[in-house]
Image 1 (spheres, one colour):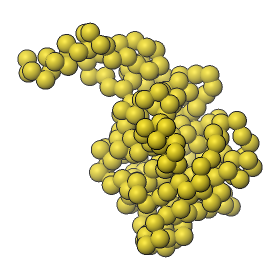
Image 2: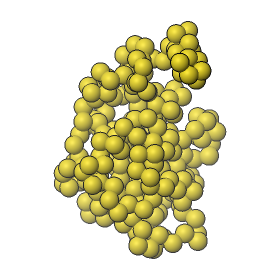
Image 3: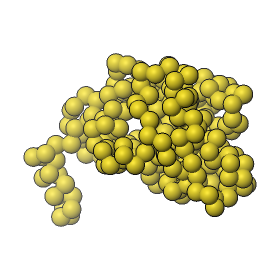
Length: 231
């Protein structure tokens, strides 16, 4: 047995890796989430429907070419527990693994065809300092591993601190995020196809604001991908 594998198994024995949903120990070959909980996540299938509820969030506002969300965000529920683990409880590695798993599921559909760059939704610097990481960058890192598409996390900036959007309605979310994002002034995205990456889409206000900022840089093509979508 190789030393690295022996050390990993010894570590798992004394400090078992747990699934963030069922809290059971992960088996050999399982990473981030157990196989049972992964298969139980309620898939959206939005990438197969150009008129999905997610796509309809942007109709008449900004042109979005493709939309995809891995699973439905239910509250309470397993999906909510997983997202909170990734977002608030240090589960950045889990976010990266789930991003990679989802990308591998999407690859046969051609969803990533023609996409030039992955752009994660940025955090405001104060939130980044408090949380210690941007979960969207880790999700994008997993997608980058699966697809080979470069992550460009310095193309978009969150310049105005906003409070949590969780309990806000559509209009209040729009007011909070409107003009909260900016791009590098010298950025030219002409003839580029950008995939915006976020953890959850609810009203679409955050992705809408990010897309509007990117559209000022040469009118690129924009698509969106999230791990979860609110029902």
